[in-house]
Length: 239
Image 1 (spheres, one colour):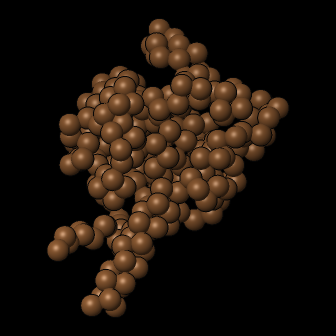
Image 2 (cartoon, helix red, strand yellow):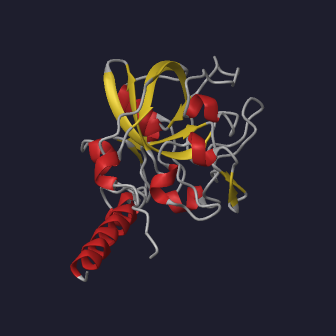
């Protein structure tokens, strides 16, 4: 008789606590940012979304004069304005995962992704700076590198040496909530969505599980686990 292995219990790993990355320099970036000599990569697209600016709804102008609260004036963002970039991409050309992804990413095996399906995009992070706590979703890769898994998931410091060894990019909304400027020191860590409290980061975006429950990858994991339990119960009952 074939024994079906039990999938990971999503109700259990929702309680996972991740370690802090302390005293990390955060720089500000934004959707639609044009390339410069110091930062040659335009932000009209992200590592995972070729139409990032279009899908967001427009230019996420960082100028406070062109913002209302935590969003840009002129349009309601269609994606969460509370976003960050971290210097790692788990995929290669959207076709395969990087060799270290399965062992480096703590939650990789929870989701059993198909080849080239990212398990990083949309992940929540908790950020502390200026005695304030903010929450945001991981939506792009950077600053400056996309392969620094030893820092993002391990205990190493960022290998990037530019902009005071910057290790995280934060959006204008995150900047404004934390009430900080550019190149500020922060602490950050990953956090399970079930542990994220409601706040201004829970109001916008089809990619935001607070707004669109289907954007929560744990739903699929829960359905898979509950289906396994139902089948296990049926097998036991039929004996």
